[in-house]
Length: 237
View 1: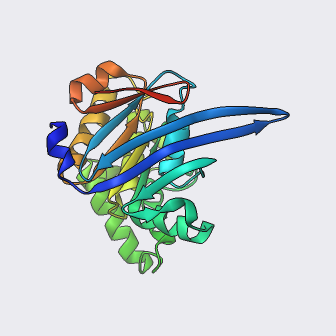
View 2: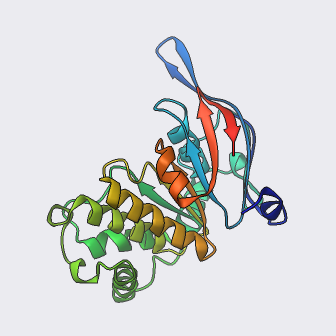
């Protein structure tokens, strides 16, 4: 995919001068130091950088889990910075799916229950319980986990737990998937499987942004990379 090709698409993410400063005791710590970035609809973008470079902070802001200290952020044309907490929660439930490094599954809830959880936060509560269960089962079947729908996380391997995490991100049919080090706890083969799955999701038209330190893995799936260093963009390739 060329940069010229992405330029004709509408922008999903537009950020300008984005800063995030945390107050630790009497010290200000700058996690992001003026980020400018545009991501088009349907892109697959990798946010690269070493630990502490600002990758997770940037993803948390893109996902409306955190607010910038300064700068502008527009998501699908909406000025996110101006929204209140209720409006941000609505955006998270309707438009964004999250995949976390640590899986973040509820330990005493089945795979299907974990997958269906985001539907509870939709405006209609995801419909009747039976309908939510059917949708969860369908997504698990799509990822090859249909037979494990009633298993709790402690009955699943690390790779299976991460696939459940991906299924949970997909359940509400978001336009944007954000994945924060989704392969960080997996072996190389499973890492490639997860990344290829995200690529397949992207091929279906969903915008995907992945934060990772694994440059070789991103090279294999071949998508645009944005490299951060100490809270600044140092390279876009």
